Length: 536
Image (cartoon, rainbow, N blue to C red; front, side, top):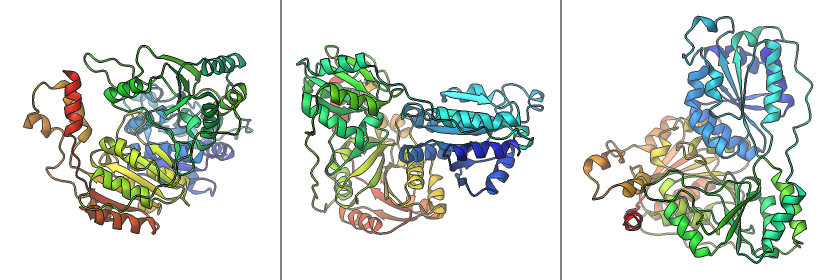
């Protein structure tokens, strides 16, 4: 057995059977060995950020680590943005990065990404990183990475694999070990959480990770029904159970101004964090606070994503004496088919009406996210994924690809902004190649719309043409129908609510990848005016 064979055997024995790949010269032995086995499915992606984003989507839905194969430091660097998103979503991912042979590396300057210190680069977005020193080392590191990636809600692990470690003889694959146990919340912490919930102070449970899965929400709903606590979800949920017959949980608004107003109007006096972090603004703004929670509201951590959140919730339910009673469940409401202009509201109404049960709804709608989230509250039951969990745009198409690979029998609907879609449009090709059942709703406004809101925070007067030229993508306007069709994805365009509704209805009744270019009418001026008013 050579090193490559021992590596893949270690992964397969650990339950990893799908590899998102963009290989190069230094990975050819790995490609060769993968091609000889029936136990590992390769999914080719045409750019590394599509590889890492697809792995993110796959692992969020598969409930196990995803595997990537990347070409040396430069290939890994191309995938860092969506590894950042995966890290913020606590997604378990194992990366294998090829490198030059150990005996050849010293012949090149250290700073070169092809042969340099790839481990230093990988540590920026990895929780665990090791470089193999021999072929026998490679299988051991693969087994270790697969185990460590499962700790808590998930970790990113990176194995750097020099080429001679692929082809040299190996001592074989180590015997698979039991998973590393995830720490439990202590009994003292459970008691303190119960005391806080029963203190009479108005309390919110701010949820993330497995706390917003369907099973987690069932427990949280019982705790809230017993204690009167209010439920909130983190701004960028990695996977949120939503729709008919499920517990409704609003998300903390992304924009700082609206989040502060949200907490102020709620009257919350203490927030208990469960599987998430203290909500803060993604960026600092001049003269503005950083934290979204007001100063007079106490924030206290009950369970982090490194804890066993499910067990913690079960223990807390017992500590407060929660019974079978739960919060009210979402009722299915079917809006009338929209008519007239193709607004964000019209898109949301059609998605709410037509999306089937158990759809995976992936969101990278950017400026349309808030309204589309509200419009789909009463839709059929579904799993909701906010693709840009770490704020790096360009994850929507890859996440939808990976989610479809993980759940081939479920419809995937992607709400995708046009500007961010250009970061990883190569994912369309992989969707066609893999016959993914993904419907891409391409929200076209020929603009980086969200940056109009951000610009309003810093400018004094009206924006100049020169400023706006860096926010518009209309010269030339991107033809998404032709672009999608060139990659093997059938596509249509819609300019009215009626056209969009018809196209979406057809897509929901057909299998395979489709793109609907929605030439959307969106007025951001009221939001711009509100932001500028608050500045004054």
